Image (cartoon, rainbow over all chains, first blue to last red; front, side, top):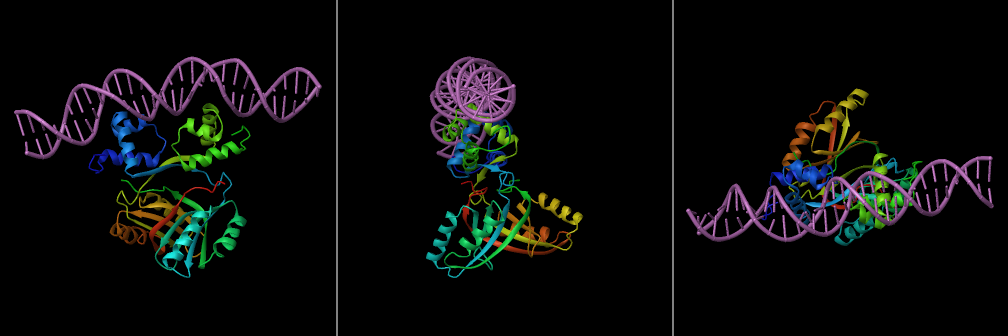
Length: 157
Length: 157
DNA sequence: GGACTATAGCAATAAAATTTCAATAGACCA
DNA sequence: TGGTCTATTGAAATTTTATTGCTATAGTCC
C-alpha cells in the first residue's frame, strides 16, 4: 500500500490471497504476489493498520462440532425509535446463537443468522428469548437445510 | 485431540481461540490454552486434518474496499428436480457476487447473500443473471442497510 | 538534470514453527 | 497390586519464518 492510501495491484492480490487463506506464511504470500518477504509483510501490516483487513478467523466445521441447526430469522420491531433500536441491537449482541445481524429494508427490520446445537436449543432461543424480547413484534424464521456455497467476504476479481 | 477423535476442553479452547483470531501464533495459543507449543501445534494440526478446522480467512472491510452493497436474495425455482437443483447450484457457485448460498425451507428454495460494488452492479446481476437464469421462478431481494453483528461461526461457550 | 520520496530487496537478527526424543500419566490386564 | 502398554506431554535442538535495519533504485517533481 502506498503512503497515499491507494491500493495497487499487489495490494489487491495480497487481500485476495489472505481472504482465501488467512494463515499463509508471509514467505509464500510474498512469492505469490511477486515481492520479497519484507515489503510484502510491510504491506500486510499497513493493510491491517489502515483497516482494510479487519481480522483473521478460523472457519470451523459446525456440523462436525455438533451445531446442526442454522436459521435465518427476520425480525420486525414494534418501535423503530433510536433508543428502541439500540437496545434491541445490544440484546442481539449478547445472544450467542445470533452470529450475524443486519438491519434490512423491506418487511422486516432485522435479519439474523442463528446457529445452534439442535432444534430444541434453537426453538428455545426463538421462543423464550427472541420472540419474548421487549419491542419485538414479529419473528419469521427460515430453516437452513443445506449450505451450498460459503465464500464469505468480497468478490475480488 | 485424542486418538479416539473426542474433543477435550483444551481442543475446544483452541477452536474458540482460533475462531476468534485465526492468525494467533502457536506460542500465544499454547499459553492461552495451557500447553507448551509442541503439543498445542499437534492438536491444531490434528483438528485441521480431522476437518474440525475447515480453513482460515482474513476478514476484509468490504465498505473500505469499495463494496457497498449487500443483499439477501430469496430464490424460488420452477422445478426442484435433482438435475435442475444441481445446475442452479453450479451456476450459483460461478457467480462471484454470490458469497453464500443456502437451501432453505419455506416459501423460497434458496437464500443467497450477495455482495457488490454498488447498486448498479447489484441490479445488473439480479436482473441479467439471477432472475434471467434458467429455472428461476421468483427472486425476492432484501437490501442490507447496516451490519450490526458479525461473528460468523459457532457459539462456543 | 538534480533532489526528493517511496518502496524494493539484501543481510542480519529475533521469534516462531517444527522435529526429535525422553518422561509421565492413565488405562488395562494378569 | 504391580507391570505393561499407549497416548500425550514438554524440553531441547533445528529449521523456517517474521522482523528490523539499511542500502539501492525507480519514479516524480521542481
